[in-house]
Amino acid sequence: MITKSDYLKFLTCPAYFWFHKKEPSVLVEKEISDFQKELIESGKEVEAWARKRYPSGILVESREDQAVSDTKKLLDEGKKVIFQATIEAEGLYVMVDILEWDEKNGHWIINEVKGSTSDPTKMGDDKKSKKEHEYDASFQYIVLKKAGMNVGKVNLLELNKEYVRNGEINVVQLINPTDITEKAHELEEEINGHIDQMRMLMDQESEPQPCDCVYKSRANHCPAFGYLYPNMPEYSVHDIALIGLSPKRLGGLIEGGYLSIYDVPEDFELSKNQRSHVDVTQTRITVNKSGEIKKLINKMEYPFYYLDYETYPTAVPIYDGCKPYMQIPFQYSLHIQREPDGEYEHYEFLADNGDENPMKALTESLKEHIGDGGSIIVWNKKFEKKCNENIGEVYPEYAELMNSWNERLFDLMDVFQQNLYVHKDFKGKYSIKKVLPVFDPELSYKDLNVQDGSMAMDTWRKMVFDDISEAEKEKNKKDLLEYCERDTWAMVRIYEELVKKI
Ligand code: SF4
Image 1 (cartoon, rainbow, N blue to C red):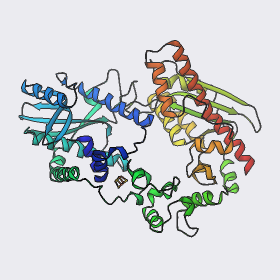
Image 2: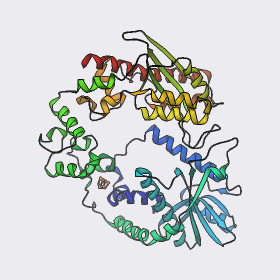
Image 3: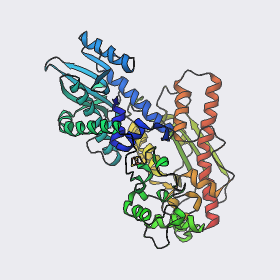
Image 4: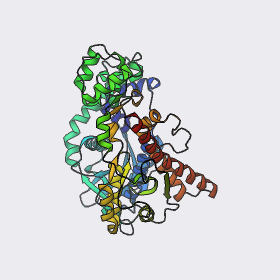
């Protein structure tokens, strides 16, 4: 049986499909991150809302063979809208999110629900996932056609990214259908070819050859990579900073037999950032462009406000004025140093319920501490800037203030992102968690129950929306406060140690 998810693996790589079907024991699947779990949950949430567009719909709750016979029964009974309609034909198996009968035109409509937002200008990875969605829905179209069903239309149902909640969710405005029927017709021949190839692969006993992922960056490697390249060093040329953007260079290194990052020749041409990453790793000598760092940090003005937000973005907005996936800050930590060598003051805010949009109370609290002058120091200013913009968008009375704060943002990460200070232990990265141990080995995140932004999001959700005991709530609160405070204190410590080194 070939399922839709098998097909998506085939689209990633036919050899990956073969391993998945024939030798799954060699696959080392990466543990899914909290962030990916959130995305899956968002997808389910969007599907639940999309179903509300079809009040007469009936859900097929069973799975596998039982689901096929339950769907058949509903079709025989003349049901017009079926959720998770499960169809099998010629060894192919699909579940249609919303199968809808179009009475007027006398044909079926496939509605494939996606947690993504509908945006025709999508670029990069978004564009890639859009393409994947089209293949995914078109595969369903072909299977239903093989099952003898008359499918006249294929829709992708996606979130309307411009939707602004105002009172009750307006599900018609929230979810945008995009008609991809023409695309499904266009892809039919190609997908039928893929089906033939998948069948041939399933009959093949030997491993498909060749696997050329050694020439590609880590993001392209499937879970069979470790099995296929057992001698690949742990810290390999695939770990060189942004090597995925330089396929020719990566190819050159592999062809030259340089697999370990320690083997890269001194005269091998790399970008400036890549060269500095490789040199620091090989020589263990830290790059410290103290003049340039001084120039950059001299832009900082006292008082120093070290600020960090934690946010809760949801696919379907939960508060008025908000759009899908809008970052909603629910917590901040703020360390203030008013003058050189001055004492640090610490302030914090954590919304302890989810009944109201926390942005307003958070802003009111922060306003009491952030004065009219001085730098607001953050790590990765794109994020805090966007949060401030969101606050100004939802509460226009704060828009001016938010703009003024955004003009005062200083991104401490720039020192590291611009390769002004490069240490071998950064391993080509510049996240605060990679940088901190180099500047303060005593301070880390290891002792915390909340380890990253996704966990913070999940912990807050449990704290304010789930039915948990007071004791659990208190524990979540403590964990969140400790985590956010660690982020701003980490910036303080990095800055303090950095100035000693330049
Ligand atoms: S490592 Fe790459 S080429 Fe090799 S099987 Fe996996 S996806 Fe295919």
